[in-house]
Length: 206
Image 1 (cartoon, rainbow, N blue to C red):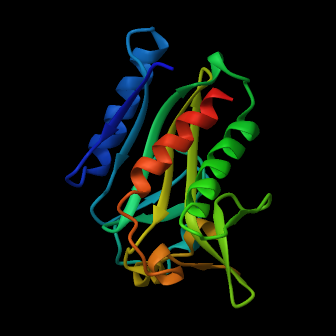
Image 2 (image 1 turned 90 degrees about the horizontal axis):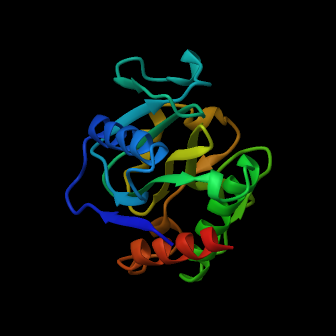
Image 3 (image 1 turned 90 degrees about the vertical axis):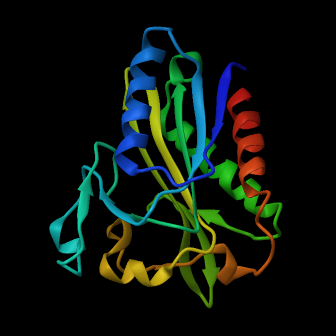
């Protein structure tokens, strides 16, 4: 499978990352570039998708950045793994729901390798962990499709500052919470990046 794997050590500015994805999208559409899986981290930023509602910003002092992805408002920052991609669904089944399911399976399968049991929710996109009978989101997914090329990506909370979510209604969901992996289980997640890439590539082959 001809996919470029890119890992950034230093934090990448959000706008620069999106520009890079969109340029790769154009090149891939013209058969001038490979598909891409890119692991990185962002500095603190609140981003809003196309389904965003202003009332979902609880702290009006925070700066928000508009994006062209689907979904609502979310937070990115240190301690959060970001996995961006540019994947050509023309080579696979042109089924957006199935592709989202592939991403969900990749995250669930990977976290299972760390002995953390998570699940998806058909009504609320993302990956969840049951904590004291409450569903807590540990991973968020945001996509955009252009000419059957899927891009943007997903994020997994590792040891990020959860108080930042108090400024917003994350993903517009009021009755559920947000957590991170260290809250769930304090262990070494150093190899999470490599396991995510391994499982994502494997699932893309199916």
